[in-house]
Length: 285
Image 1 (cartoon, rainbow, N blue to C red):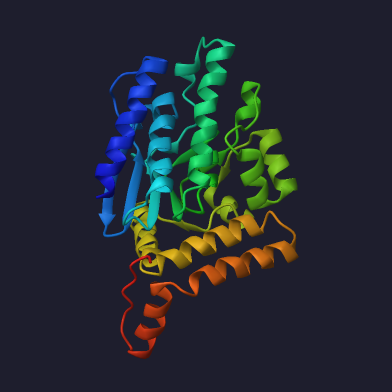
Image 2: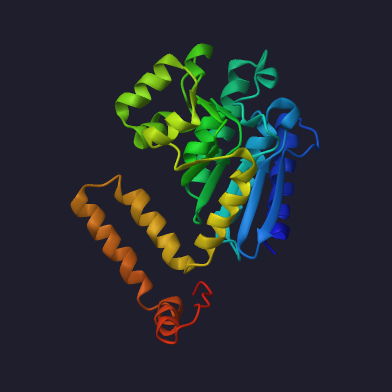
């Protein structure tokens, strides 16, 4: 089971964290396999607006690097926050208060690795933004493949008010989502914006009533998980990497990704199921 494997990776990361940072045993994530092939990951510090501390960064690394090493039967992930107030309010400034420059940099290496782990996750990751996604919280959402947001959700890139800049991918992922000019306005001003504006600008795919958010994201994840998993993975790679290339190179990458799927059992099963007028049974091989 995916949870057992992720549990062992989590324990390893906790051991590293306790040795390196002197942290407690309190968990910051809730992990649940909510459908046969869907994992729900909840940032679970509602009393602190799910603020990102070192422990949470390491636990997110454990989950997403674990999926990179071996996804098992997981074909899609939904990432959300506990409670109604916040998805993630950004870096935990109480933990950071009084940090030396060296300790700050050491912690930030954790957050950098966390962002790369989410971006590099081989299976699709849907952010279900249930409340405030500020600073690092907005960056975590932007690292996901796409975002559903509660109508009441708020976003902001607040780093300039603290004397820093987005450092968990925000200057890159936000600009790619909303355009360079819009990203400059949002990052320079640090002004919050709502879910409707985020949808209009292309950061959010869909806004929903809060009570429907997570279940709608899970239903979308189940739909994705029902498709051929190797095809979904190759499509994710082709889109993400192709957009960083010239059109000609992107087309060549797409054909390489396509040709890898031709000899798969899933490709043969998909065609057979279509002709037999039944639902395909994809096994990821």
